[in-house]
Amino acid sequence: MSNKKIDTILHPIRMKILQTLIGGRQLTVQQIGERLTDVPQATLYRHLNKLLESEILTVVAEKKVRGTIEKVLAINENANLLTEKELSEFSKEDHLNYFFTFLTNLLGDFENYLSQDNYDLKADGVSYRQANLYLNDEEFIELLQTIGHAISKATKNEPTKDRKLRTMATIILPQKNNHNH
Image (tube, rainbow, N blue to C red; front, side, top):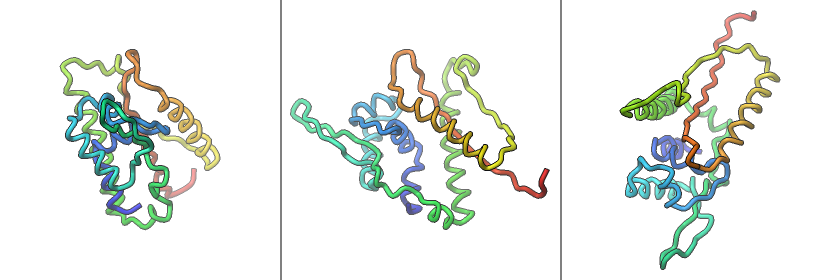
């Protein structure tokens, strides 16, 4: 994946669009708009077009609805996902820029949450924590698989009146190991 494609994905609105399609979801533009109520329709269309042009999204079906053609979109499985080799070829500056963009997007989401007139961190389940874990490689892989399975299962949930949209971000940073314990 080129730096250009990563820059396309890391835009806050395009990240939100992609998050609505995670887990193999196939949605119409209208359904995506219903899930992203804070994104104006013209802005949504502009960002969907950018994702389609970059071949990150693909049209998987077309439905005729009231005389117009409604496209059903999905994440393109052949979107040339980032390989370990490509990732290793990015400079330290590239990695810092992408990480900073990720954090900025997350900060924007948190700021939007706090801009509500009434918010209740405890009742809403808001949390930000850091845990230092001592794990060998096998334990680490097992932990990632457990977390991945749980998240994958939750991403399949469809919106309902009793479900709140929640953002969960994961950052894993190994610490510089100057000596063994």
